[in-house]
Image (cartoon, rainbow, N blue to C red; front, side, top):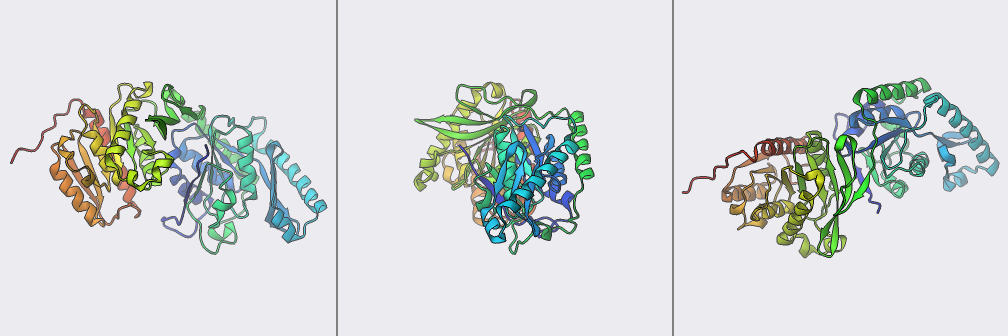
Amino acid sequence: MTHHRTYSGHDRGRHPDHYTDRDDAGRRLAERLGHLAGRPLVVLGLPRGGVPVAARVAEALHAPLDVCLVRKLGVPFQPELGMGAVGEDGVRVVNERVVRMGGVSDGELAAVETYERSVLERRGRLYRGDRAPEPLTGRTVVVVDDGVATGSTARAACRIARARGAARLVLAVPVAPAHWTELLGDEADELVCPLTPPGFSAVGQFYTDFDQTDDAEVVDCLARAARRVRAEGTAGGGTDAEGTAGGAGAEGTAGGVDAEVRIPAGAGRLTGVLAVPPGATGIVLFAHGSGSSRHSPRNRRVAAGLGEAGLGTLLFDLLTDAEAADRAKVFDTPLLAARLTGATRWLTGRPEAAGLPFGYFGASTGAAAALWAAAEPDNGCTAVVSRGGRPDLAAGRLPAVTAPTLFVVGGADPWVLEANRRARAELRTESELLVVDGAGHLFEEPGALERVTDAAVRWFTTHFTDGAAAVRHPPAAA
C-alpha cells in the first residue's frame, strides 16, 4: 500500500525564502529527512545540479550516493523549459501540454531525444566509469534534485528508481511550486520540500548562487561519497520489508531492524513502522494525538532523534482507517490505551525487543492513552514522556502510574499547561514538568520541537539505563 507523506511549507532558517547555494539547500533539505536515518538507504542525485544537494543529504543520512541519469527534453527554442525527460533503462516521459503549447513537431521532439540520450550515455561513462550502478532492490531510495519546475525530470527519475527495484521511494527537493504534489504525488511514497513559495517561476529564482554545476563537480561529489561510505562501513544494504505478528521483521545493518509492521488488534490489524538500531538500549512506543497518525511529522522528528541516540521506536496507528473516521473512537481513551497495551504485548514478544526496556511517548490525547496503559498492573513501562498532553483524559488512573513521567508543555498553551500541573500533582511516582517558553500546542516554533526531542532523549536514556535499579520515592503522605 502506498502512502504519501508530504511535508511542504516555508523553511524557518536564516534565509526563509531562498537558499545561498546548493550546499546550503542540501543541508536544509537533510534536516527534513532525519526520520529516514538508520534505514537501508540509497540517495540518488539528478545530474548535474541535484548531485551537490544529494551529496549533503547522503552525508547527513550516512547513505551511499549515486546518480540517477536523467536528461530533460528542452523545447527547441526555449531549452530551459522542459517538455519531457529521458533516463536510464529506456524511461521516457513527455509533457504533452508543453509540447502542444510550444508547437513542437514529432521530428523536433525526436531530434531532441536522440541528442539527449547520447549525452546521457556519455555522462554515465564519465560519472561512474567502470562502476556498476548502486543496487536499489529492496531499499528505500531518496531521489534528490535542486528543485522542481515542470516535474518531468523528477517523474522520469522516480520511474527509473521503481524499475530498478526500490522498495520505497522518497522524492526530496529544496524548492518547488505550490502545486507540486498534484504533479508528482502519484510517483513517490513520500514527497519532501521545505520551500513552496508563491510566485514560483523557476528554480534558480530561489538561490542566491545558482551557477551551473559542471561534470567535474559531479565526479568529485561521487568520489568523496564513495570514500566516506568505505570509511563508515555503510554499504547501505538491507531490505525494507513487512513484519507480521509471527515474523522477525526486516533485518537492517549490523543486527538493526527497520520495517513496516502489522499489529494485531481484534479482528483487524494496525499499521506501524518499527525501527531498532543496532545495540539499542530500549524501545519507545508512540501514541499519537487525535487526527494524527504514524505519519505525524512531529512524532517522526522526535523518533529520528531517539534513533540517533540509540533507541528503538515504534510509530503506529492506534485505530484502523475505518475507526479513525469515528470521532467518538478518536477520543476513547480506554480503547486507545487497550490498543497501546496490545501493541506493547506484541512488541515485547518479538526477538528484536527481547530483554529491552520500553517506554511510551504520548502526544495530546495520545498522552492520556500512554498514562492509562502505564497504569495497568504489571505493564512494565519504564518511562513516559507526554508532549502537549491531555492527561486530564486519564483522570483517576494517574495515581496507579509507576513509570517516571516527563510532562513537556508549551508556555503559550496555558490551558494544557494547567492540566499538566494538576495531573503531575496526582502522580505517585517520579515526575518532571518542562515548559518550553513561547511554544504553542503543536511546538511549531523554531527550536521548540528540538527542545522536546532533547528532553525525551534525556528522559528515556536515563530511565532505560537506571530503571531496573532505580528506587522510586513516592511523595510523602500529607
